[in-house]
Length: 352
Image (cartoon, rainbow, N blue to C red; front, side):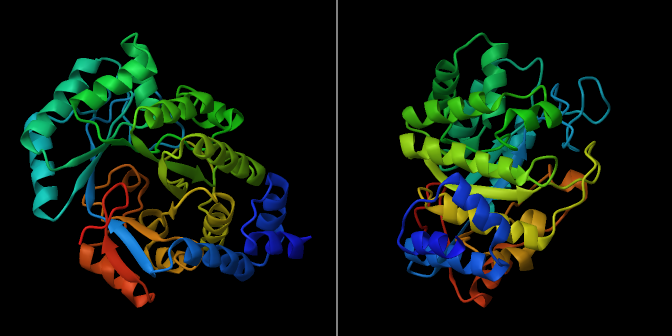
């Protein structure tokens, strides 16, 4: 059966969920990587590996969700909670621009008291002061939270944010798009249908978005593939996703008892994502969670994007994982693997 599945891949035919599971579980690691690499070469024949220069800005860590996997949040009233001031925000954005950054990843929390006007004022201020910066902000769970807190529809919420300056939406908060898993690890966060609905509406309104997966906690291999199926189905409808980014769960300082995924588990998942997500152009590797050497190796398992320089990153760091890379180091890792590094924008246009 594996030979027939491999033949389908080489003939550019779409795999079913059952075929993909068979490949994921049974294919030898390097065969799986080779199949994914062949697809990457077809989609990106110029041997280019991209990266983006940006900064993760967490505007607040005060959150009512209490997700079991999160080591970053603080409950309302808990010591260590914060909301960034405008001056703090300005300083972070200016530093990003000074370092060659083109965008910010603006994400926060489910703050119980910040109404939509807070976010509109924040976006308006950023665009007035830094018109050149691309605002990649507010994951679907945040947008669902804003919607409910302000008695707005999802469409109206996104439109208000767009009018204030939102340029695109990150794929955070997806975790695993299976509600059995979500009820266990993030019961107060939006459902999988709600997550997908935000993305579909955003795409229809003209916003591009990314998609993610946080794996390696309580989900099964089949549930990982169901997650990919739901993303592929929506991409068939809207073509609004620019990239897929899978990253391994980091268990330290969280309330989930799980071991950290191995490098081999990560590479298998990355490769099967490249094979199954035939309507996604870009697959991003994760040096932030796996380290730069494994991210470099992942370029031969289907990855074509090295992700962000992450001038600042707080959420993964709260679990004790603190890899850091400069622009020069990212370019070197790409070049040493035999690829051509190119800086990109969120929509994957190249910055010459």
